[in-house]
Length: 237
Image 1 (cartoon, helix red, strand yellow):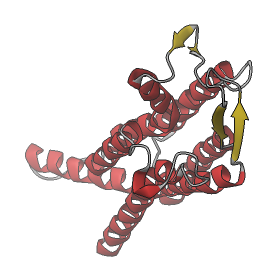
Image 2 (cartoon, rainbow, N blue to C red):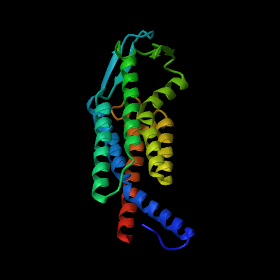
Image 3 (cartoon, rainbow, N blue to C red):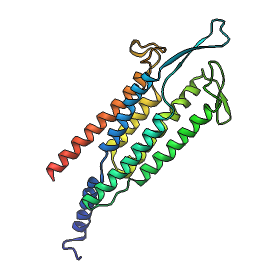
Image 4 (cartoon, rainbow, N blue to C red):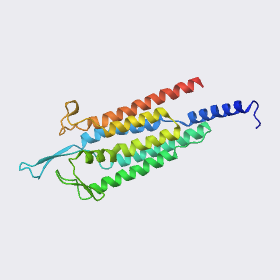
């Protein structure tokens, strides 16, 4: 359709329309809500699966080994979260009459989740590593006590399966706020509190509480903030 006005006015109107379409496509609060709830759910799973064992080691008295968590919780939970996000965005796009660009986020999340699951299966293919044994990571025998090994272990967890896909979603939605949230989440995942945080001993059944509570709180607070912002935009419209 021919547009009235100067070229500058036409381009300005097109830019405003583009911003409105992007705002209508966004549903950032939904994936953040799912990921936050899933992360906090890890606290309950870790508590219910807590086991403390004494295993042979160079120490004459034996070593204490703490086992927590389920090998199926995160792969299944994150997989369902990404699929639910895809369904939510597609239904929302059809209802509002706009397209959706959520596919890169979902595909990236599922691909990285597969990498994390494959890495976990590789490390535990011969059973859980015993205290003091080298950690076999795709043929690399790493010292379990070294800071580099602990960093790699944190990287191949929530940082890879949740944080990096959030960066992709921030790029897709052209959202600086989500970009800042994703960076904050990655910082929390990669720089967790030290041992004995808040007086919780490493052998306590609640030792994983800070590991899940902090990133879970970041995600849920982000979901709340984006939901309130979306509701404010809807009232203004």
